[in-house]
Image (cartoon, rainbow, N blue to C red; front, side):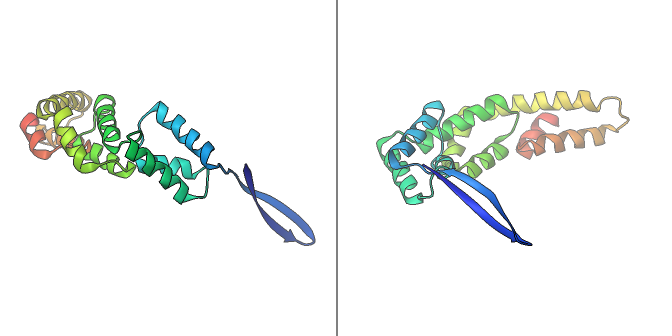
Length: 175
């Protein structure tokens, strides 16, 4: 079912009708199907899935009852979402734990569990390897720009810290 929202403006005897939005309002069966299709593609956090589903209906209690039912039955799992999100972020970005966990928090993932998963998936040795690669990349970029060794080292450390890595780990690699 479609719901169209109009805005009527009358100016100097002329009536204008502006379409503000067209919302497809879904019933429970359609909403369950929509959410199921989303979950078939990838994992979602409950918050993320609710945001998507609320674009299709105005009944937030219906959306949350569906989501709670899926969580109880295991169809939707915040832990699975957290694991998948961290695996994806560590494989596709050069971001460190601080930035990955902040992104997870914003998407509604379980940050406490995420810290445990992060340590298991993206352990210290892997982080140090990525820091070394980032250091080498930035060194090449800064080479020949006339910076002192101290300034170059500072720029490299600031760059890596901005990627979300711990300062002690950066010092361990950069020196």
